[in-house]
Image (cartoon, rainbow over all chains, first blue to last red; front, side):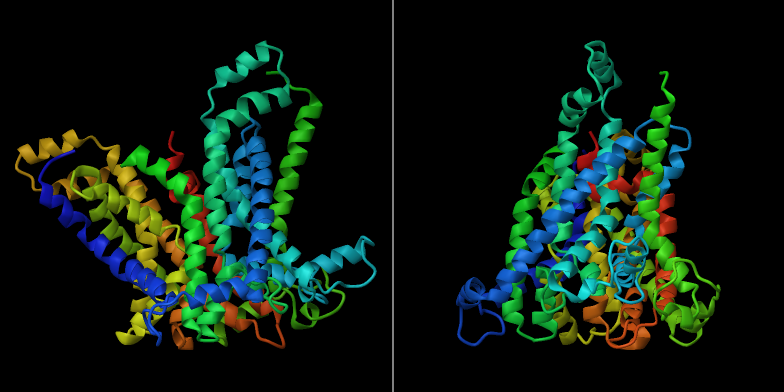
Length: 285
Length: 276
């Protein structure tokens, strides 16, 4: 690293200004708005946050978000690990499957939502068509019209779309595990499952943590997929915290209350991401 | 290693199952877009189109204004990629080559900003744009997208620049080069593939966004691709062949570039934490 103390500041100045004006300023405004210091009338108060505690819609939305994120992230990890192990095998034609493996993730999330909305459509959707053809159901199911099935359908959709990214992180991890560890395990008579649990998974642990943290952050703030697929409905059955903030802010114009929900969400995400950020900074800065 | 026939059978069976799972929604999207109006609204639906037609593509291209949305998306995403690339190069060089007070704190701020949910920022930003008369302009949208893509651009470019030895800079400066010339002539040519990949990621992130376009754009002539597609889904009657034709067009560019840039993907969003 070179000296010239002030030159460094000049290089990072334009980026820092953008960060401060376009992300920093709105973030601070949102916090101030949520405690009544911007746009409010009565001065500082925690009224919006006490309202959150008693708001059944907020409770239901938080529960939806939690169910959605736990289900989707679990699927992503299991499926991601399985496909990563598969693609790590030395088989002819591997690159073709590698290309196919990441395809779902290339789809913009709102487009994924619309495609699955079409697939789960009651009368014209492919899911009901195949289900009835195979005799699994007698009459078409209204997937997106029933509260619990709608949440299930949205989980299916995002499970499909998001897993390749987790898979790629885990595949990168698998490829960096030294081969001699497997050879040593084989000499000790370890089978496939034993080496999976005693060589692969322990070595993969840091990558699993990174994938887990980033995936939780992304799925917690997911917007386009749910907006495109159900718009949060029926009722509020598939509404997550991001959609709730959007609706409170841009449809009901209750901007102070919307900001308090957003601040809670942001605080949770920053706490979840803290270990990842600390290890990244320690390694790089 | 010698493997039995059952090993190969199982492996390929699993690989083909994965491929089928991944391709099914794409298959549905493409076949639906090629169905006739009659077929796409009939019950029960067909899994393969009985009659192929490109009528839906012709309709959205000539009647629904999709050439304009497509152009708007190219413009907004392209400007985002260029702007965040330019600002990101400067900042990454600053972080990579200089020690200054507050450097770690600033890098931490850029990193943390990537974790914030868009809905926290978009409301106050919308008010800010309204006050500056930039609401419903592409400039306002581009500035927002740029700031979102800037943090990972900086972190990725810094990672590439760190692999270029500082001695190259020092040698050039002994020969009388300025800092600026070092960056342009010594560092940039060496990180060019990484720079292009990073800029394409910015492009694609802006391309796939819905939230910011939805909140900052009202004029239908200024809609981006994703917003135009979303608005195509009416409340009462959805002609799925048209919607799917539009999504095929909206998917084609990201699918192409992501597949091209596979090996940069992991570094892209997981950043340097993935490097061992």
